Amino acid sequence: MLAYNKHKLAAAALGILIAVLPIYWFTNWLERQGEAAVSVAANSSIAAVDLVIGRTVHALEAVAGGGVDSCSPANVDALRQAVFTAGPIKEIAVLGPNGQTLCTDAGTAFTPRDVLATEATSDPHIVLDVVRAAHGEGRFLRVRVVVPNKPALAALLPRDALLPQLGPDGTPLKGAARLTLADGTPIATAGDETPIAPRNDHLIGRARSQNYGIAVAVALRQQGIVASHDDLRRIGIVVSAGFALAILTCALFLPRRQRHNPIAEIEAALVAGEFIPYYQPIVDIKNGKLLGAEVLVRWRKRDGTIVSPGVFIPLVESSGLILDLTRSLMRQVCIELGAAIGARPQMYITFNIAPRHFNDAVVLNDVGSIFEGSQIRLSQIVLEITERFEIENINATRRVIAALQGLGCRVALDDVGTGHNGLSYILKLGVDIIKIDKLFVEAIQTERHAQAIVQTLVALARDLRMQIVAEGVERMDQVEYLREHGISAAQGYVFAPPLPGSAFATLIDAINPVAADGEKSAAANKGAPALGRLSAA
Image (cartoon, rainbow, N blue to C red; front, side, top):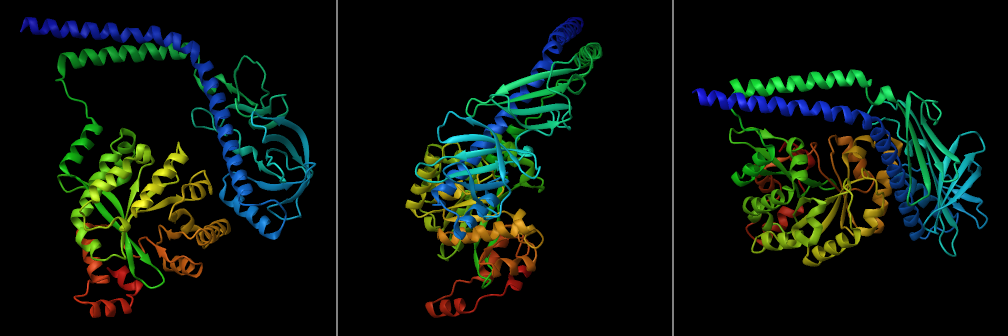
């Protein structure tokens, strides 16, 4: 017993020694904390500006690729659609050979712009201008894309899209930020009116873009970054002493407990089959027929508790377990609904696929191996890739999508309109279906921009011969609006919530029964069920 206590006391003493070390580290850390904070703020600001400019260039190249080279009514309409869908762009203009504005997305009645300064970039086809509106709207950064033998296209970016309005701690910026061209010409400022100059109560961080030759300077109040040096030193001593006391208490009185590991819990749940598919019906809103379903996931724990995906999906994605989860859902769908879906060739089933599933064509192997021998045909499978996540290699992803389409599968682009890529993914990935996010469906009756975006997507889908599906439909007035504006497929709670496999199988049999012979089948298909019947189910 005495030897046991000696070991516990030795462990406690060692813990106290280790706990004292942070005091030394903490003192040195304080010296670097302020400089690191402003450096991070400056570098993150310039990275954000680079990203906005890059996406703007992408949007202008897409417009040019669409054949916009004049001020015809059709081209002005194309400019207007690009402004709606391309992110934080205030205006897109067609420029003449001398740089004069010929027209904008508003037509030929536009606000004159004075060019204050011009900056060449590392790409000879991209030029940056600082412009000022003649009527006192302030300064803008104008991004020009010069296309050989064609009029140049230019986009105006507002200040709010270029500089942070929040500081490193997520609160309103405690200081100032300034964006300039390489020659020092101011583009935009944010925060308070503090000049970007050395002061005792401010720290300054600077960063410069490697791609576009612009620079950012951030001046933050020291009180907005860390407290006073002496205050934090005292805090560090108290925290370290408390840490040492906690170690001593644990060593003497508390039994050792294993830390909860959520990743291990999810892995165990996958092995135990606790993640189960739920099915969100997809409906033809013109005739009420059941087109298929989107496969969602729920975590049904051993005690019967159902956990919604918002709780565990971020952890599943970040841990890399999303691929195993997707494979598990595919296998379960084959078992649960293979016979029901296979007997109805006109129906389809959709799976959400993480962008990393397209790396090295993993999804090709999974789809081929899982559905080989299944009653579900490859032509009944739709794979959804979301616009919310950045796709690192567009060309490689496009090749995988083409290979899937060669197998007979279809590919859908989910959450259209909520990402930052505008029309880029739709045009470059070659998908078969686009899904309008519920954000726009909710706003179509009240927001003019939402209506314009929906109408633009409908026209685009029609021109590219793609199917379009509206998500998150919850009211009959939304159904009527979508139907009147050319959308025939939708999903949402107005029809049915996500259903477990048994309930969805019952719904399939009720709405779309399999006839015993051809005559019964023809009779069943002749009359379409009403939407009210599906809602009641």
